[in-house]
Length: 155
Image (cartoon, one colour):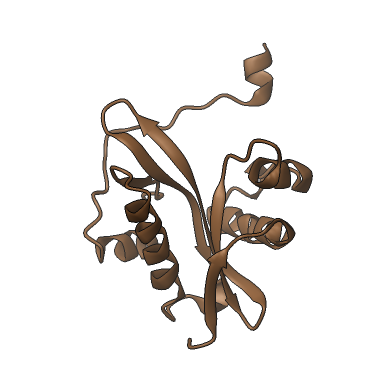
C-alpha cells in the first residue's frame, strides 16, 4: 500500500465519486436511493456555495476510496465534523486504505478544532462496526432517522 495517495477531492473527481457512491448504495441494499445528478453533486461540492468536502484515496491515479464530510452544528455539542459517506472499493478492503482515509478525516476534525466527529453506520454492517470499534467509537442506539424528500417538502 506504499503507492496509496490521500488527497483533497477535486471537481474532476466527481464522476468517479458518484460511481463509488453507487457502489456503496448497492452494498447498503438501496441503489434506487441515489437520485443526485452529477451536475447537482458537482455544484454542491464546487459551486458558488459548496456544502461538502472530501478526501480521496488513489492508487496509480485511480480513486479507490473516499470520505465525504461537512460541518454539522449540534446545539448540544457545537461544531462537529459529519462524515456523510466513507467507502473503500471492495478489491482494496482489508489492506489498510480505510484506516489511512479515516485517520485523515479524524486529523481534519482535530485541525479545524471541531468538538467531535459523527457518522452513521447500519446496524447490520458488522465489518464497518468492527472497524469503528477499533477506534473505540461510541455507537449509539435509540435514535431513529427521519427525512423528507424534495417532493414532500413541496406539498
